[in-house]
Image (cartoon, protein in one colour):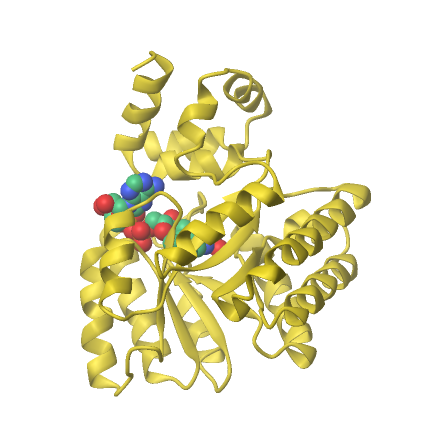
Length: 305
Ligand code: FAD
C-alpha cells in the first residue's frame, strides 16, 4: 500500500518540489546516489572497482519532452565515458541508459541517434551499454531500438521486467547467442492488465524468466537482492552447465553491499548499478517504494537522527 503511494508520488511535481527542496534530504539520497558530477561518479567507480565490483553507471534523468534536454543527457554520457576511460576498466565499467531521457517519447529516431552516440563512446573504451526498461508503454519501442543498436554494437544489453505478463515471451526472444539480458522484477506501478500484482506471482514469474535465460545461449545478468532468487540462479547454473562468469549478478548502489562483496569474494562477477546526477527524485522514490524500512530511515534523517 505504502509502496503504491510512493510510486504514485514518484510522478508528482508538487511532491518532487517539496522533497528536493528540503536540505536534509541530500543526506539520505547519498545512500543511494553516488554524487552529482561525472567526477564523483568516477570516484565511486574507482572505490567499487578496488572492491572487485564491476559497475554500470546511470546518469539520472527520465522522461524528457525537450530535444535540448535529450541532447544534453547524451552529451553527459559521452563526458562520463571519457572520464571513465583512463581507469581502463573495459566492460567492467559500462553505462545504463533510460531511453526516455534521450527523447524516446518525443521521437524514437532521435532517441536511437543519441543511444548510438553513447554506444560509440562506450565502445571506444572497450565497454558497452545496457538499456534500462521503463513503464510498459515503452517496451516495444525500447526493444526496436535495441535491435537497431545491436547491428553495430552487438553487446548492447537490455533490462526485462519479470512482472510484465509479456516477460517470458521477451526472454525467449532474447535468449539467443550474444544477447545480454538484465532480468529485474520491475519497479513501476503497472495495471493488472499488463503485470502480475502480488509479490508471490512476480517472484514465480522471475524464476520462469530466469530459467529461460539460463537455458539459453545469451549472457544473463541476474539483477536482484533477493537471496531466494540468488539460490535459484545457482541451481539453474548447475543444471544448465553455466560456470561462474557465464552469467553475472547485479545490485543497486548502497543496497545489500555485504551481499555484493560476498558474491564477488566467491568469484562471481557482481555489477553495481551506480546512479549519479542531480535529477534523482524518481529513482529515489522507487527505492523508497521497494522497502518500507527505507522510508523509516528517510524520516529519521529528516528528524536529524
Ligand atoms: P525485492 O523482493 O524487492 O527485495 C529482496 C530483498 O532485497 C529485500 O527483502 C531487501 O532485503 C533487499 N532490498 C530490495 N530493494 C531494496 C531497497 N530499495 N532498499 C533496501 N533493501 C532492498 N527496474 C526496472 O523496472 N527497470 C530497470 O531497468 C531496472 N534496472 C535495475 C538494475 C539493477 C542492477 C537492479 C538491481 C534493479 C533494477 N531495477 C529495475 C529494479 C528492480 O525492478 C526491483 O525494483 C529492485 O531490484 C527490487 O527487487 P529485488 O529483486 O531486489 O527484490
